Image (tube, rainbow, N blue to C red; front, side):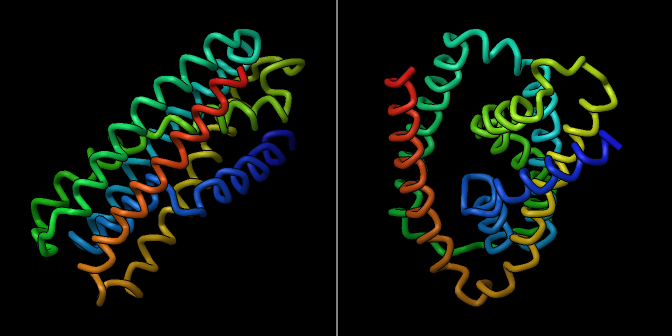
Length: 207
């Protein structure tokens, strides 16, 4: 019963956390537009694998992170560097005028790794899942029950993947405007990186 309650709460928390446009889901949508729906699905699967790992790490490190502010600062600083690099990358890519190419066979072979890489670069799910684990007392008074840990990580992975899958299914609505979407989504991603940089800086300064 406890596992079911934990699973449902974590599933919906993870689903909601990925619904707003962000690094991973916009990458899924862009891949669908540029390289096909199947490639976008593989990106989502690759991201889901990494999110599963991130959720495990979040639960196991939750108590340690809450007890050591230095670790929180290091995570934020690492994220700040990554967001700066990605912001410059997406801005340059948006400025580069190049038509969308559909090399789908090659893209499918690379998409799983691409999804894993993008999800690994996105460090914010770890503190997000840490906060959820803390709120549900997985990091404090409750013993480290492996059934609860597995339930939490699985729910986080499936909730996130469900949201990413919706992006795969909805890409048809923007496929006719593929080139325009690819261009402006890169601008959006660059803007998103700027917002995340500001958020990371504020959190670093306040810790």
